[in-house]
Length: 167
Image (cartoon, rainbow, N blue to C red; front, side):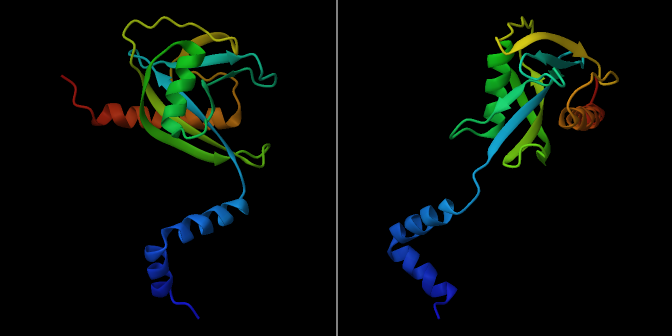
């Protein structure tokens, strides 16, 4: 029987052995897609929601999209918000991670984001029809994940503002 210590020594001596083992292991692991959305908050404390062309059941939701190859989730949110609206955002913190029930190989992530543009001018992509800025007390009819994200963002936003000293 090979011990863990012996295995570690083999991997140190022959690092390509680990690379090969990892590649074989990955062949048997499930491949997944990952989507990321951003709760974009402006200087007035309002949240951006967008009307999607390709979402017939719930056209209103948060900006976002699928993570690209070799991309970090926070980079995905920044890229997607920029592509869809022309806005630059700063990712503050993650909010939710959920397995999507209707897509068995998909995971959704959401992030709280701050609008970096001081005088934002929105340029909608071909994927979007319209946009609105809502207060945290308003809620549009959105997919469940977006609703849960909106609620988590409201709580996170209020706790961030409560901990920030006011002048």
